[in-house]
Image 1: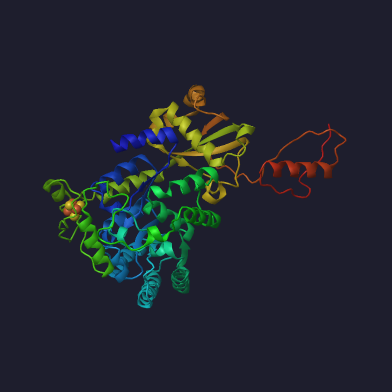
Image 2 (image 1 turned 90 degrees about the vertical axis):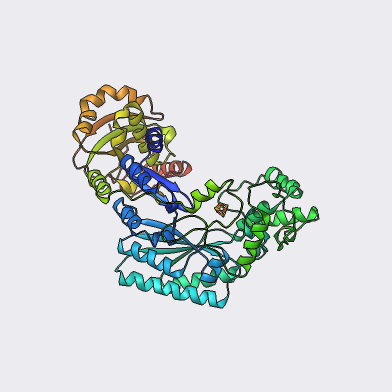
Length: 506
Ligand code: SF4
């Protein structure tokens, strides 16, 4: 079913990558069959994010990721020490993280992103433990002869409703914990690791307020969203936070009304939403968290006899059994995935020459390439299993380049397909010219001028030559000035090179 859906999405969206998002990707029952069937359909399968504890016992998954070309891995470490991880009920020891990293480094991954959570409870001994760990990781990297780029990404703790943390004082929203951030950053950089901060204090403050908030906040929300017109897009400006504080004050409220430590019998705005988990259970777990102790979580996994903790979420004994006895399906044969990977190396290129309308001049170049792949797959469903990705001048499609790049006029795209007799038959020049009008029906804003299968080596496009006609009275400096102004006004990145504008007569 999923593979069928993916095939249809591939054609409808011109996809070349599928990314599976989950907090705990590697606990999925059908993990291996899913990776295999997706990898058959699409050139790149990406998994975000994974659990260190499961990776540490599943060397096979690391190998599979290497074969399918996944070289970037993201994992959650959360607390910077075992004490803090226990308070977050993470069930993750330093040894498990280390073991997982050992497998990853051995397998030559290029980038490891480790997510950390700043709890506001960090003490010197936690920083000490973190410093030793980061050093150990650096040593492991050198011993493994790995060039992996390690990035630590720190987010302040968010205290979500319906979890034990709902009772906790919202420390990270009450105060900007700059010292913690600076110290974690210092430790990472000292050991040559990269550091990023993934959420600002303002974002955490507003998120936490809205999560904990009740109806009393409605007037402030209306003022901020409707009167001030604030819409969240990547960031919460400091002024928005100041406005919110003023609005709260006018309502006779403050953040303290929401961020204080709650008692067992406090009433929460979400208490009337029954998720089946008893408040008593959450309160007891909260007690464990504040004493930095934890129990094993209830999901069955290799080498752990999982037990039901009695949270009340499962409606029957059968549901409980399903969770505690949960297993991940047996890994498929490695040979099979290697064979698919080998087949994928054998590619054939289809060159497509397109003419892009001026109205599309601010559209990223990659977008048109994806639209061509889509049009081709919609008009010729038989090519869907064989389409791989936009190819050749891939540097043109790099993420950072996208906003600086533009496409307009004649452009050349290269589409890669699996190479076999069937594809050669489907995409030969004669059959494609017969299908050109039906492919064209799925194109808007550009027109396909030509298809060429296996075009041979194409020189990389470095420059585009434009020929423009001006009246004789126009001087060169005037043309240069006007052209520059025009390109600038139309957001076209450009450099006018001396001598590159030439005058021809006739
Ligand atoms: S098995 Fe079900 S009821 Fe028991 S702790 Fe887990 S989720 Fe809760």
